[in-house]
Length: 360
Ligand SMILES: Cc1ncc(COP(=O)(O)O)c(C=O)c1O
Image (cartoon, rainbow, N blue to C red; front, side, top):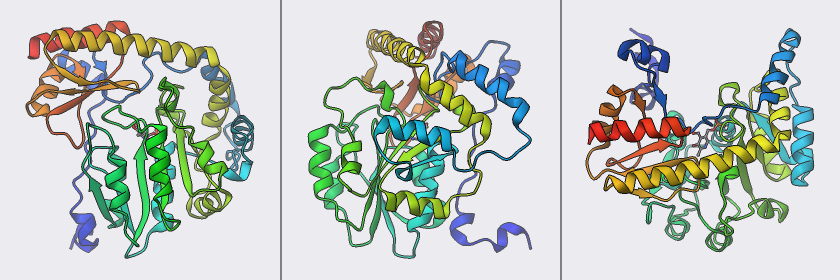
């Protein structure tokens, strides 16, 4: 009898997650420099100040990290005008998603989200054998009206990425206000704002207002995107004391490392780097829009650092052909004819568009 024979059926059913080979290996195979536009990272890297802070901290890694993440939580809490008990740091915001799923787990608990969103929302439900309702998208965005109508007495979590990955759309203030009003207190709404810093829309909601009003809303943000620290795994969540206190009960101790904590502190203070990254991202998006339109491709205008392209044919055929040209992009989860392209440097964006010429 093998180990896989003794695990529950729902675990056996999970397909093994296959991430790409590292760029270096693909480069060796193809003999060309690979362009990584598949992970929505910051192509300009982290703030040099964060790199320096991390480098100098390496001499102090013998002790365990500060488990409370005191200084980072203090800084973030002061910025957001919330108490430190209303804030949790984590090993990436995905880590807090996992905590929330674990905290509400019971045989009847249900999760509600959209059909085309961040893969981790679905993976967690599969791993924990939870019922998950996927409400069809409307114009590539969350149909929050339809979602509110699907809430049941067992709905414990609603997960909304705002901006959404992979579509780049946002739910605007008026829509979100109306939605939140319809959600009963037995449901925790998670607003996953991993791409928050990139949004320039004046109707983008200030989700902190819900928390200040005492609503059970959990806001997730991260240092993985505009701050360019995805490799260090650090993110944070803001919610009521009640919600954050509960998450603390189910988290693993020492879940953020000390180097990540000091790098995040330094990255947070480098406003110039963040601003520059946001500006270059906007310019990159415009450049990609023009290039896609010129090639007759439909795209969804994005509020984040990636763009969804509607190919009108199965996306893996195109993404695999692009990979052979040394360009990594992804088929979009929940939309079989769409691919998601991260905004790169000007050079990377040009390489993507010229590879696209060869592939189409
Ligand atoms: C919507 C969304 N949430 C969360 C994450 C993951 O963030 P982290 O690196 O903080 O776990 C991503 C990463 O792609 C994302 O797209």
